[in-house]
Image (cartoon, rainbow, N blue to C red; front, side, top):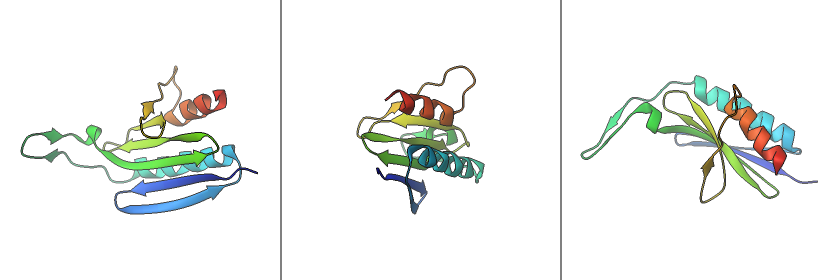
Length: 112
């Protein structure tokens, strides 16, 4: 039986979870992503040469690793979430219709 790992990054805090099945792991990704999105937002950050809006900042990340799968959800500083796949070269998962980032991630992983 394959093992699935879910890593939750919230600022400096890291939590590692495990799941026995892909659907269970995707449920964990959605639950933890929604918790991160409901948390406090980020303020804009100004550096010498550039400013970053809350939308440009990744406030939290939920990563999913399993047999042949590297994917996850980034939660932005304004609470918005976007799904991605890949390891070194991440590609944003485009949503179709009114699906959530979590539904889009499930759709893409079901096709692989």
